[in-house]
Amino acid sequence: MDPRAEPGEPGERGAAAPPAPTFSPLYRQIKALLLSRLQAGEWKPGEAIASELELAARLKVSQGTVRKAIDELAQENHLVRRQGKGTFVATHAEERTQYRFLRLTPDDERATGRLRRRLLECRRARAGAEVARALGLRSGDAVVQVGRLLLTAGEPEQPVVLDEIWLPGTLFKGLSAEKLASWRGPMYGLFEAEFDVRMVRAEERIRAVAAGAREARLLAVPEHAPLLLVERLSYTYGKRPVELRRGLYRTEQFHYRNELT
Image (cartoon, rainbow, N blue to C red; front, side):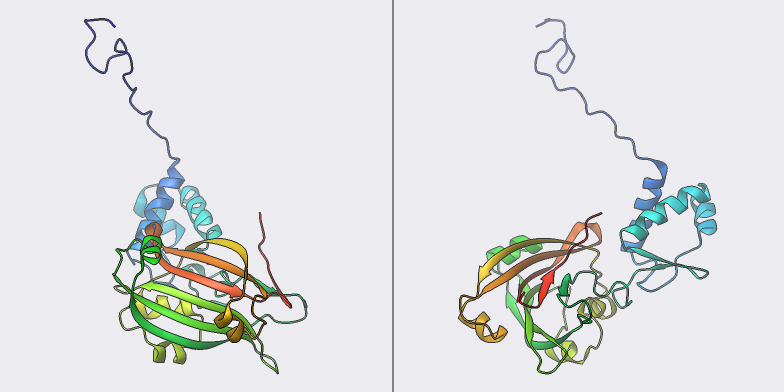
């Protein structure tokens, strides 16, 4: 080692070089800025955002830069373009997005695939270690636990999905069985409208499991029958986890479908 070298200079063995600065294209910077404004609630779900021209003037960039940022936000389902009307904040109440996270599809392509809900429970509880870890909480923090069945709408109705859902208690104060039972739209639409929490992204893990006694009874299958377990962690803005969901799926007449692009 060169005795004249100061600590951190190239002459000192083992000194780490400073990290190279990262470059972000201008449209990505605008996209991040718009996303932060969505997160702050400047535009609510279903509301129109400012026009591209207005945003370009306000942010002192070209309209093409704004358009490229909005294009990516639309591809990621944060925004929705409507021909001749403008660009709107996406909402789970819309027909095109309300079933975006439900990937269960009937084998019979002529069937609609719409399912009816039956609420089993909605109660406040204390987070166990696993739920707390997934939701970024501490063990013992308050959570809202929801259980429900999804059933085919035809006659006779058939249970297809058994969902267990955990939500952070601080974000969902006031969520009750009565409120869930009276809500006619998708559950994520309720979360938007009543609790100002919007699910923007989800990660899922899928595995095959055998039905236990309770699951077999609720899903009307023999005990130990094969089921598909779909574990989902949903996030709102800022990569904040706000829902842990475990769904048990019957797959005799349905299949899990995902489209990779």
